[in-house]
Image (cartoon, rainbow, N blue to C red; front, side, top):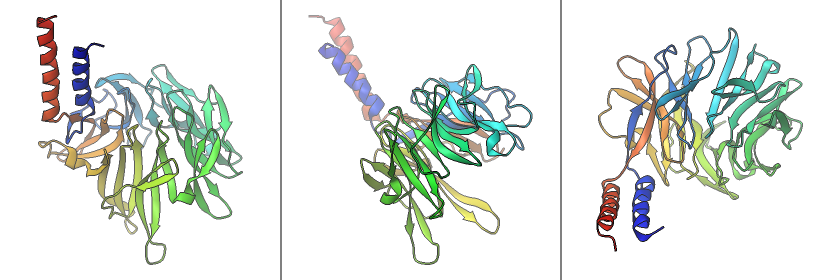
Amino acid sequence: MNRTSAVLVLALSAATTASASRYQPEFLPVHDGFGSRAFVKSLSDSGLALVEHPVIGGTSNFSVLKNSKVHYTLPQPLQGESRFLNNINDEGLVAGVGGFGSTVGNNRAIIGSKDGVRFAVDTPSGGRSINNRGEVAGSVVVGLSARPAIFRNGESVRLEAPDAPGEVVDINDNGMAVGYWYSTSQFVQIPIAWDNGKPLDLGRQGFIYPTRVNNRGQILGSIAERLPGFNNWKYRPALWFNGQLTVIPGDHSQENLETLDLNEHGDAIYSLNNFNEQTFTFSDYEWRVWLEGKNYRLEELLVPGFDDNEFAATSINSSRWIGGLARNRITGDYLPVLFKPVPEPGTLVGVAAGLALLIRRRRNPR
């Protein structure tokens, strides 16, 4: 690469990686026939979006978007069929669980693609996520309960664990997996990471539930801190890496917390809410973004001018795109949305300078 090209590449790279103080919502199309409600369930690093279309009283439909257009739709579920899809990989494969009936023995881990839906393994099982090698994290059914497993090339691989219920919730491209098993003697859930098939008890480091693992081996999850009083706990989001646990700082005053997604930079999405035990309803929702070492409420990141909408975040990829939904305050309908970083003015100046230098050198060759 010559010096001129290097200058241009550096300027363009800065535009991609520089800190973005604001995000621009991009409303995505909804597939005809799937209704007026949808949201982004998962984002791949290749820019594909898995969109869920909820059906009141029925099973959701799903579509995959590419370049903000419908790339493919999954066949609609059959009468009586349940189907839950959770995430998408860079190739456009999606993973989840489907079946007929309410018992675990009737369900199968499934993989969806533009060619349709197939079983990850043809035995009672469930799927939670899929990596870029096509491996599905999930569980196999033994007797009347699930056991942690991954599915590879149509075969199930049981992970090392005691003979107790559990599942794998995520797996990275290096085969590192996270999940849990349930201790029937202690009546507690034991959070586990499997590295090269060997289990590591994350609970000894304060974790109560891991949800995502990236290719660096960072794990996103939550911890519980005991407060004064009976059965009084405070839940906080946390990152585990190389044996070190880091609690994500911030004002987490709500009772409930759910960690949702993690990218290769260690950025994370999580939500907070309160639960009313009398009415069995959730309220005071907040969606938080842990971005480049700082904690933001989602609305703090957005450009102004979208007051007619309430926004929620579900996922984040390594381009730092955020997936979620926009609910119209007037109609009550909600649409899938991508939040994309708006480059800082200084970054745009750097790109312009690089382009100007390239043009000048081409006009004045040595």
